[in-house]
Length: 409
Ligand SMILES: *[C@@H]1O[C@H](CO)[C@@H](O)[C@H](O)[C@H]1NC(C)=O
Image: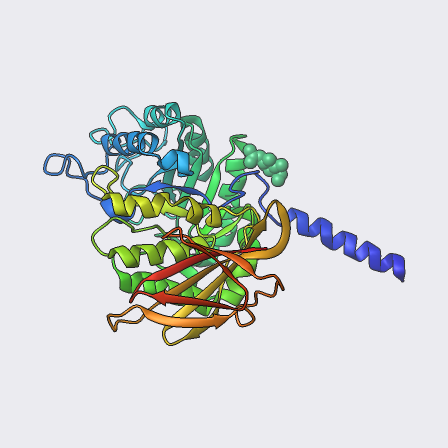
């Protein structure tokens, strides 16, 4: 009986090992820049030469990533979203870049960003068309995976428009096998749960972990606080179901950072950064890096915030208290290389609108912080430091955040 028991545990461990995609990538949440939220599908390069989806846009943004500290901070993927390809495949059925907007071709663009030390990501769609109506990969899955690898693609975002959501689980897995067969390490970002979950179905996260490094769980982000709030509310509502699937190599993805665009105030931008870092979400900026203000840039480059997001334990933080319209998020983080869950990042997110910084006080016990000697507290955005032995007091700005690191002492 005892041997049987051991064998069973062994079998479970072995099975457990092979149920996750094992390409050695995305051991921390991917970071980078993607055009969609800020530039959408602007294709008119005559009227909008600096804003159209073109090789010039990506070369400009890659230059800024390398020169302005983003790459150094960890933002190391530049990802081309929808609307990059020609409307027709070539004579050999291969996808090709739009000849007017990407005249040098996709390989040349990949080479350009690689020379800056940046990795290259490219969008595709599992269905017959992309969401914007460009050619999809269905019926060409293997050829497209091979084409991407031959161009030097390091990250594929595979969308799911114009496909049957019942076929996605098997279809994405097939595409994943073709990516693997190319021999090139390629981060695989899947969109299939977004189609199922927004339709009210629960996706199969065990299957997702087997195939994908990250996956979009829910609807697209838009340039407003109300959508940041709606996406956050959905992830909190489903946190018990989703958070256990987030770990090194595979991540829940609530979509891009909109920090620095038109829709969020400074405090709201800090709040998005706080939530995304605590959720161990991919940090994919989508912003004009040429014209971004220094204050917004500081949020994206905040070293402590990024370090919390990139913590090697890879635990997705969760909301543990929600009173007075203020959420308290808690994410266990590593302490001095030990994987004991003894230190924490804490986020206090206000959905209030009453115009004052709202004062809240929490006992360490309420926060689940049980070290008898207390904690060294660092305010991530102000740099203030203090020691907490019994309580943590915060004043949270309306639709804003206080972001703390509590290190065990
Ligand atoms: C392909 O899959 C195998 C088995 O999971 C893995 O060991 C290998 O690293 C993968 N190769 C690439 C290039 O992803």
